[in-house]
Image (cartoon, rainbow, N blue to C red; front, side, top):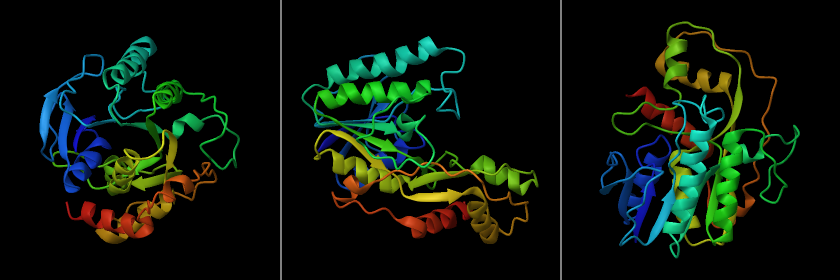
Length: 273
């Protein structure tokens, strides 16, 4: 299968690009730069026409935002954020008509639900961030066309060549002896997410949750400092726990994430860089 992928050079998209190639598919990376993992590159911007000729499927992982920010990623230009990410994505759905499509959505669509809510795909939603609202609007339009959206949690893993991983700044701050704030989040390894994306190319339309670990920052940094010998300060455990996503629908397709073993392998690879 020849799979077009937007956002192939992003922190998350690079895992999808690698998995497409590892499973023997042909990769067509749509974007400003070619994928560091190989495949074919076709120049493209989110608000421009997509060169999809000859492609058998589309995975849409591109998103325009302020660097390092998703919620709040509109910065001081919400109108431009909407034009690029919502209008551009709706145009992409039109251009990809007839192709199997998987959209990389976000757990941000669940923003605003009460603490303690188990996040299932059938909940009524009214996200309180513009980021979540755009993701929800885009996936709703896609579902009506028969496509699938993957509501992804935080994504971690070793970086692609020339990139930094998502925790690089955090680990550097600890190495400098700087205090870091407590936090707790849900995480999934990038390769586990990528395997889910490819499963959804043959799955029924609609939303699918994708998450694995509930990870306190103290536990993450404890694992890191024991591997590296860095003696930086560890934060206290967070007294706030995020709502957890129920991924039973995705697991029913045969998806099994790597759990703590995958986290340990990733940290070993990061420590060796």
